[in-house]
Image (cartoon, rainbow, N blue to C red; front, side):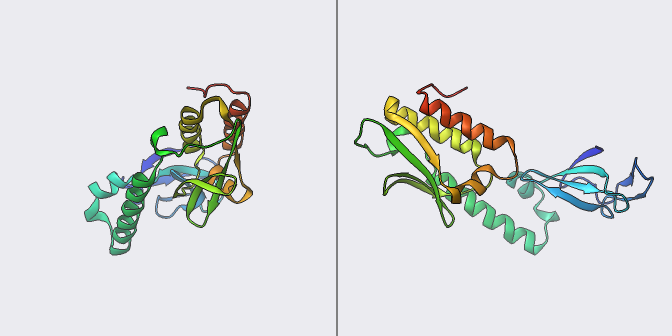
Length: 193
């Protein structure tokens, strides 16, 4: 794999040479390959070899480069900031935010309804927040907060089928990661640090 560029670097005008077929051109001439949550691949337009990786900007980086954004990018950034604010305001941060639940052994659900992620206990929704893609890290954080609140009574946190696309995302390792978190809950073990 070639160089790694930040989104606001000069990758569009940088000269690129494919090590596989010898193609030469600029980063802007390269085609997009696989796109992930934090980066995208730029490929040789002749043989599809990866020329470089392009990192997507953070909200802060986009704000710092506001003058480089066109009107559509500015509107997208403002929508993204509003969504980030909503997520921050509705995020589960502490055990005290959760309701008391009856029962010796608690089996909770991790579900998705439209743009919301839900934690359920039977038919009861105990927490609702905006969903986001590739949420396995957040799953681990929430599992720990649930463990802090409900202690040894928490026996399982079961993802629904409709929640798995956003929970797992594009990274295959997240399936294993989520399964390990669930297994620790089932075995009544503390979360991994």
